[in-house]
Image 1 (cartoon, rainbow, N blue to C red):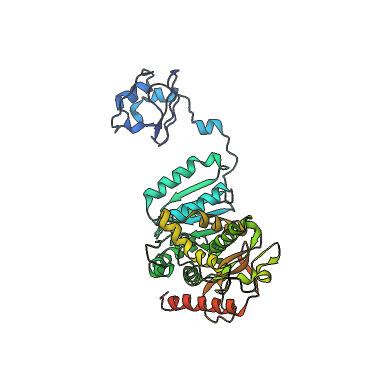
Image 2 (cartoon, rainbow, N blue to C red; image 1 turned 30 degrees about the horizontal axis):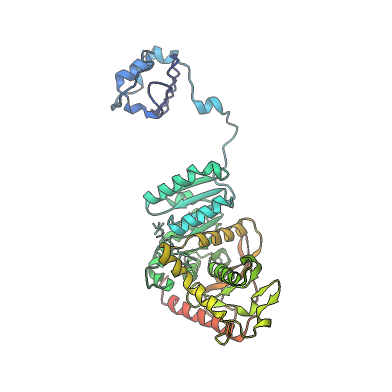
Length: 408
Ligand SMILES: NC(=O)C1=CN([C@@H]2O[C@H](COP(=O)(O)OP(=O)(O)OC[C@H]3O[C@@H](n4cnc5c(N)ncnc54)[C@H](O)[C@@H]3O)[C@@H](O)[C@H]2O)C=CC1
Ligand SMILES: CC(=O)C(=O)O
């Protein structure tokens, strides 16, 4: 039942809606629930007798008939929302830049932060299986919303809030413990993916799926198989993060900005990743023209130490702070930005590589790809050395050997 009352007392202005809230300037206090008011006090309020006393909380079992019929008809209807705002049409529920983030752990929150703070997505829905942390994170974001462009932020354990997403980012699942490789997480995280992909797909059949959970290449493959979507609608964050680390370490050694170093890492986001030293350059000046054996063990300047370090960096950061989330959050947000903006930017991400560099199995590994609103639109045909090509094929075999025994 809806009952809206405006009492004549200067001290009481009460709005009762579905018996939910009582507000007043003086006596009742904001947001005290009507059911917490003793019936006698409610009656006094309705009779205009109570105009300024603190009302103690007590359970209320009465109904709207507390006030007499006459008293109620004397009252003028008011509800602030309706008084203030003249409704013209219903707002669109899901905006075209809606992104859902699944998993409100360290990575999921890193992704949501990067999306929201950079204003990449104006509607973010966050889902996690466990409500407590999810609610804390969701409230924290909501309290910041007026500082970050008033985005629409939703959070729930129910996948229904993800409906009509343009992009679904998957960050759910366990992370590595000490001495575990990313590939060791395969079974545990694939089992999670098998249960969450079908409902996510049914709520957002047109979404592009971006995978961050590890092992990212195999989980991208699992997403592809379980969803039945065309492979270009599945994008693994892959070696984008390794490429950032690679460029950073090289730039640090040269004393220039990381964005001024060009170079990529392809293959598995894991121990078998392949640094393409043959293509590293600054302003088009190829390192290989200066050091022909750059990246090889015979290189006296030991540049290969940098690519070895990149393989370890995920674990190093995890050992120091317990997890990694800032760099991956920003990598994923950049991928989402390319999708939402249909930019066709070339990023180093995990895609289905069957047929590339003589790999004949169906599997996902990273190569430079152009990305737009439909997902991956092009894969760059890289020029690489025989050694690099062989290393890429080895990376493919390592990932395939773990993937091939999985039941999907
Ligand atoms: N691709 C990359 O470069 C990186 C990947 N990762 C990977 O990301 C994943 C997440 O890592 P963290 O966020 O650090 O872990 P976390 O433990 O902090 O968060 C994982 C979240 O997933 C949630 N979750 C588990 N099952 C779920 C389900 N069925 N539905 C909804 N939510 C569910 C958990 O409740 C938890 O909040 C791990 O697999 C980790 O290895 C981490 C860093 C970088
Ligand atoms: C954990 C992980 O995959 C990374 O930070 O590279």
